[in-house]
Image (tube, rainbow, N blue to C red; front, side, top):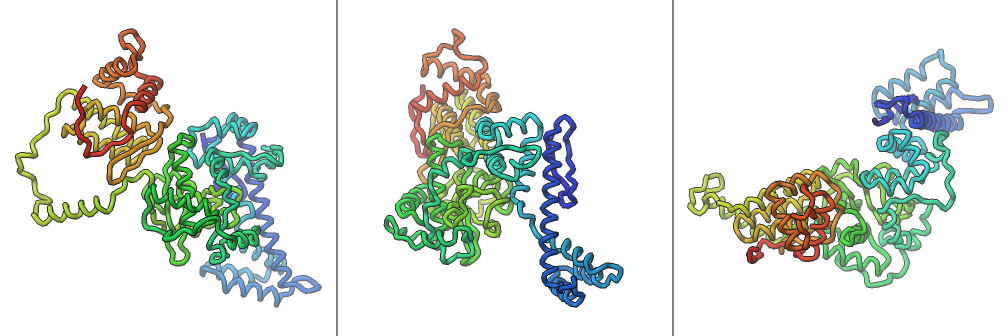
Length: 543
């Protein structure tokens, strides 16, 4: 059941799919509605005070002065309907000047954000994550423990929980009433590692060029740091690139750390290198990392998207923004991690282009040229749409071991695509299938490498082939049917006997295999198998 807040602008919050079995959640929703109504009233009051200042004299509202205010608002109105409303409101002779001023204040307030907009939006997202009293009470009693024990939630959801738990607006609501020590700070694993970068100590090399992007609360400090001496050699030739690779990202990150300064695109590479390294070391769970740039002339800006799992860069919902440059420009509270709700440069999230994707296959310039030449050759021979009659393209007959491997690899390919959403792992499985069919790789070797790669914490593709590092958690039971096919069980029994000394006949191997047994397999393969594959690999001897 999910509690959804609708019609917040009317002050009465309604819910869907919620019952009286969760009175605390109900009360939280009511408190949030009352808070929104209160802040909207404050905005109306603010505009009314401004109107009074500009249209009053000693005796109260002055008709001529108030008319001047109405005319000014009328001129700036965006639609004909708005202009008509302003005009009719002023001409209504039965309405007092005081009521006209109040109505105008309400009109202006509708276009103005409430002061706690970010808090309210994150609270609404919270109610999409936690929607029972049991879960809410657990979160309130110990937010840090709740975050650490709910790894099943997305990285975006965990970050929302962190933002809410540290937000005084949430903690002071009557239904929450949570007393928070002044030195308390709730954090996600991502925040903990970003904090270790100590980004607030870095300077922005282009702060003076983009003064409008500086947090006013820290303007003097940001400008002062932008003028400091470099701690190392300046980065040469590091303008915004159309594409990056892992090696160049690491090199740039090293220089930024030495200098303790950077621009947005070098800061983005610093963060990317840090996160990729942590994933490779097994300290962070695998995540989808993209370096993207907002292209708008001199207003271009580069940052990271975390777990943006589609090709649509106009929709950033569910993704996190990591922007160390924002920290260097004074937006420090979140250690460079943002949702689209609290990102200070939301206008720069449009017209995005991706220049690095850790889950996208990398094609070198040499490969790209080769592909273009091959395509041109095929087209020039007018055979692109013709059915081949070559005798060499006969059906490939597979033996039992090849069929077993191909069926298993096909299952893993679909798993990589549909469950993991990892394009590189999917691509590797396709290449392994081809290698088995062409007898370039033994079925045993292909099965072992595929099993190890599918559980790799990080994987990359370059012009030489594929390489992977580390191991991810083995906790997804949806892979079990692929591993436990009849032919694969026979293979695993043999593998356990030959490689681990475990005797299946004595009941030491479970039938079917469970996740614990798969973990034993992966741990064994991690010690014995190569962590790379090249399509140029030669056939090794068969067992």
